[in-house]
Amino acid sequence: AAPPGAPPSEAAPAPLPDPTEGERAQPAVAEVSPPAEPVPPVQNRPAPPAVPPTNEERIRALIERQRRAYESQNMTLHKKDVSNGRGSFEEEIRELFKEAPPRRVRFEIFELKVKGEKADLSLMQTARYQKKDKTVEQKSLLFWELIRENGRWKIKKFNIVEKYPPTETGRLENRLAP
Image 1 (cartoon, rainbow, N blue to C red):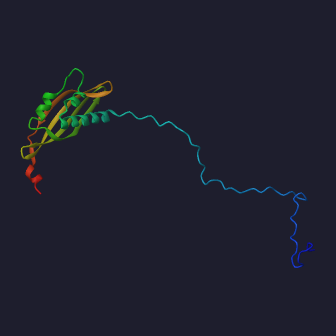
Image 2: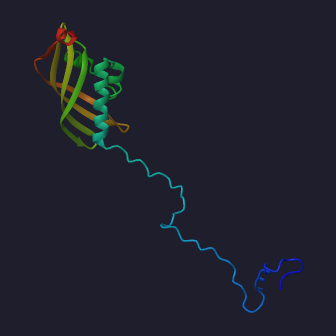
Image 3: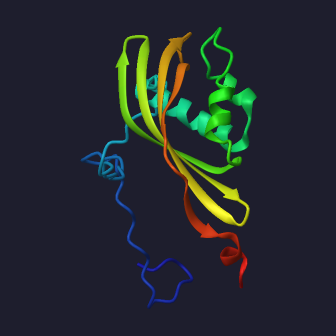
């Protein structure tokens, strides 16, 4: 029956079932799908300890420092890599660069033999310099006897095995011409 005062065409809505009658209603549970991949918990792991450089890496660093010292004619930088009590190899370096100060120096290792706290190193040095209106390249075969002092490789002995005749690589005016 329609409620009093309601038009006869509108029917009263059906009452909702009482969950306490008969079967108890189950609580609503939202379905959540698990993540595709489990996410590991964030852990603050210490970084693995740095691997100390090898003898070869340390010797290559020495060669690079000497290259920079030669290019800049910085004897103070050079002396930092000379064995205690030796002083420096300024006389040998003056002999290498008596033509002119180098503009660029490269080293190529020919042979490296490490024997405990000592090493023998043979290398080819190529120095490029300006001589009047020419660019010249000079090659020298060098031998360094190295010793490890306080964990750092240093030059104990420095020999110029052979200094080859300079070769002209270009004329200055050719480089300056438009």
